Image (cartoon, rainbow over all chains, first blue to last red; front, side, top):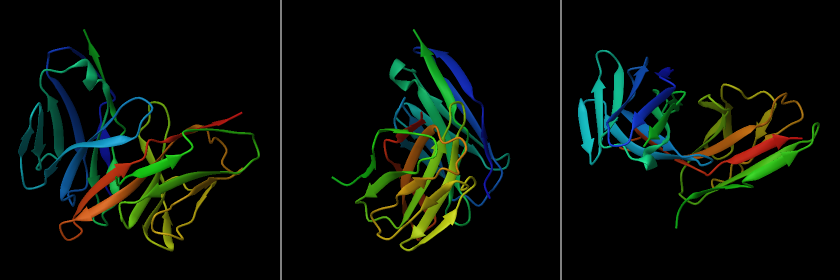
Length: 110
Length: 116
């Protein structure tokens, strides 16, 4: 099955770019996902990338995928205080079961 | 509006009691999952169900039970056998598309369970 690892914490100044990294072990994921969790709430799908792409841009979000190294990253441009949250990367194993990383807590400071 | 609803939002349980957390979805999804989230930890899979009347244990099923009698509903019972039940519980309903290869999870707002 999928094993997904993330760094646990990131502090960034408002207006700077944030980069959250994720590595995974199972290459059977067709799609890789980024979810956002605000305090006391469920997770919401933020963006995703198809496994045969190496980059996807969606407004302030850029997803980079290095399939050879099994490395996924999420870049948030012009980070705002509303971007403070926990970010999870996820991939589906060959059975379609989602596996989540431990989550990266992003704190945006003024 | 379609969505997934968990209730209650907060739940207090005395030690030795069983409690049931509700999860309902009207998204017509076949698959539903229960996760547990502890501070500083990621999501750990408790149970999942790919279809009605069928469910499988996840990574931390001990002390929990589920049922899937209806497509819309996947209740989780936290039994007295669960040694450390205080946590945030998240239910997800799974949409599959593109021939089943693509998976999107829709999460409820969570239930915070506290043992008192």
